[in-house]
Each structure stands twice: as C-alpha cells, then as structure tokens.
Amino acid sequence: MKDQKSAPLFEALEKFRKMRIVPFDVPGHKRGRGNPELVQLLGEKCVSLDVNSMKPLDDLCHPSSVIREAEALAAEAFGAANSFFMVGGTTSAVQSMILSCCKAGDKIIMPRNVHKSVINALILCGAIPVYVNPEVDNRLGISLGMEFEKIRQAVYDNPDAKAVFVNNPTYYGICSDLKSITELAHSRGMKVLVDEAHGTHFYFNENLPASAMSVGADMAAVSMHKSGGSLTQSSLLLLNKSVNCDYVRQIINLTQTTSASYLLMASLDVSRRNLALNGREAFGKVIEMAQYARDEINGLGDYYAYGVEMINKKSVFDFDVTKLAVYTRDLGLAGIEVYDILRDEYDIQIEFGDICNILAYVSIGDRIQDIERLVGALDDIRRLYKKDKSGMLETEYVTPKVTVPPRQAFYAEKISLPLRETEGKICTEFVMCYPPGIPIIAPGELITKEIIEYILYAKAKGCNIQGTEDFAVNNLNVLK
Image (tube, rainbow, N blue to C red; front, side):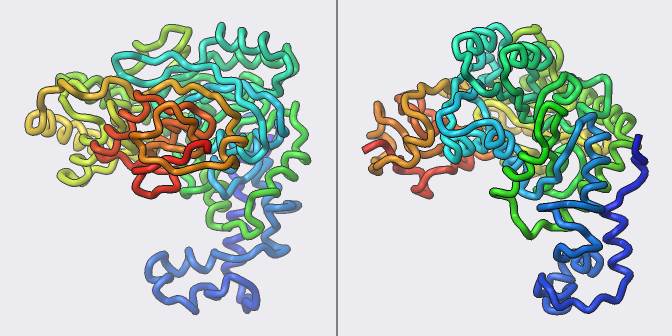
C-alpha cells in the first residue's frame, strides 16, 4: 500500500516555488511579472505555479518521477492497475479509451444517449456504433440505463465487436448492471469502457453504486473536477490490468497537449489525497444532503425529485443518490425556464435545465444552508410562476435512426438547408443542448419531424443549442 497522505507532484511544486529559479522558459508571463492583471485575477501563488515541464517536475507525456508517483497513488486510491492524469477533461479520457480499442471499421456496442465526445471519437477513428437504444421514462422524458438482456442480444448479434461502452451513471443518476455487462463482454472477448464522468464518488463510499474498477471493467473515464473537487478540465483515465498501459499512453499522446498545466495536475494530486483520506465521510454527508433536498422538494408539490424508487433492476439497475434531478413539467415550466429563473432572480446557479428537468449538482463543497436556499427558491417559483402545462413538449429524448456511419457522414459532401426543410434528410453534424451534451441528432442520422420540433422547442425555451456550422441553428448540414 502506498502512502495516500503523500501528494508528490503538489509537494514538488511547493518545493520549486520556494527556489529562486530565473525563468528563461515558457510560459512567457514569467511567474506573472509580465502580466500584472493576471496576478491580480488569480493571485501570485497560483500564477507562480503555472510552469513548464522540467526535470524536477517531470513530464506528463512521459512521466518518470513525481507525476508517475502521483498517478500510481491515484490508481491505488481508485482500485485500478494504472491511472493517467488527463488535462483535456473527461472528453480526452473518453476518446482515448475508444481510440485504444477501436480502429476504422471496428464495431463498438453502446447506448445512443452518450456524450458528444463518444461520437466525436467514432468520427476520429472510424469505428461503427452498434446502438442499444435505452428505454425512456415517459413521465420524466429521460433515457434510462442499458438493459442487460438488450446488451446480451447485441453481443451475440455482433460477435466481432471490440468493446461495449457504458454510461455509468448518466447525468440523471441512472446506473446499469455494470457487473453483469462486464462479465458478459469479457466472456466474448470484448473490452468494457465506462464513461464514469459523474461517478468519482462511487469509489469512496459503500452506500453508492458499484464503480467500474470494482466490477472489473477494462477502462473508465472519471471527471475528478465534477464531484471529486479538482480544477475544471482535470480528469483521470483508469485502467485495469487487462489493458496495456504503455499502448494507452501512446494513444493519449496522439491528442493530449505537450504543455500540460501543472495547476490542473496538482489539483488532481491533492484532490486524490483528500478523497483517499476523507472521501467516505465527505460523500456520506453529500448523500444525506441530497436526500434531505429530495424530501424537502417533494414536499413542496408539483416538483418531483426522483431517487431510489426508480430502481427496477432492469433499465434502472441502481441509482446515484447524490444526484438531485428534479422534474418541473407539472409546474407548466420547462427545466431550462426554472434554470434561468433561479439564476436571474435568485442568484442560484444549477448545473443545467433541459426540457423537462433541472439538475442541481450536490458535492463535497456544499452546505446545508445552500440546500435550504435552493428549496426556498423553488417554493417561490412554484408560487409565482406556475402555469398551465398544456402544449408543452413531453419527452426529453428522441430515439434517432442511424443510416450512415458517423465518420462517413461527417466528412461527406453536404449542403445547408433551412431547418424546417430537412425532414427525411441525413444529418452530417451535431445538434445538442449543452449541458448535458447528449446529441439530439448526430452525423449519419435521419432527420424526422419529431426531431425538428424538438430543436425548435428547445430554441424557443432558451436552451444553449450548439454543434452546428450555423451558429444560430437556423440551418442544418445534410448529405448532398
């Protein structure tokens, strides 16, 4: 066992900061002296640690000392054989997983309700998705988990698939039967890749769903900056012993920067130490706060903050009780409308609002008084803004029809048409509300009347729609 009280990279940076090194290297602000406004914004200590790779501080592309030690400590803390510090966010980790397992023409089994980074990886490597469409909760309008029997059928129908990709948990807290899926995939010689962006905490409290590494999944992408407390854009890629870590490092280095931020890496190091030493207690408090919030919100009327009652051991095998997702449609308000009111009228910034729901992210930095302020604001909104819900869109997720592989469609000859004239055409770009970043439609998918109506409705309600070449999303690119 390694000393989890240690933070080797952070400690090396602290030692370096106390030395009187004259910088004739990059970055050009030279410990902030060349940019006083930056120092005023971030503070002298922060800017002085924004340094370049050098022998005492190691090199992320080929770590051999303090970064390697820090990554080894992270692997042990998360129960993995190896870990990599990622400074391009979990997007980079997800894409590295797929690029490590799939080449052009290879099949990968996955749900369609994946983050855009997954489909972007397919465009980069040319892999072919075999979608296992998730069930949809017709009341909440959200997609659920991957049912084991559907995965079993996809695995047997596609014995040449290289991997199975699983979201666990989803943004809404839905978990699949990851252990059974992993055992099935391995029995057929397939790797299991897990987007665990929203599941850092699974590793540090036994009252939460099973983590990817604990059930033997091959690789997992973990957003330490989401629930783990590190700086935005910092993430971990975890590997089990079934994966060649040296090859994965080569794959990572195809796309990851050669100028890694030591601020991001140090934040991973100290956050890992904090979770290893204090995570069980910290996430125990998060669980209690989230449940308190659910109980209070459900007592208001009209809102529905969902939880473990959704578990059916099929499409919802387990539920992440730290997720505070709230259905708002019974108020006559879309989630994005409640999101905007909370920010503009109550100075409360939640994670996102979509067509039917809001998500308030509860983590180790929250306090009970913050929860009470959120509950009070939601009570006010119910009293002041409630209206007739007739005419509202009833579903959050529209199951698309894939007709052309994503890479082929993305790079094909295309034309731009007004959105209302694209019905029946094949899309060559993404359209998504961000967050959560799950495409409404992706390259290679058939544009239907339902999808057009969804996009128009989301625009009208104020969702942040992106992914298209046309910034205003009035036109879509389609196959020529």
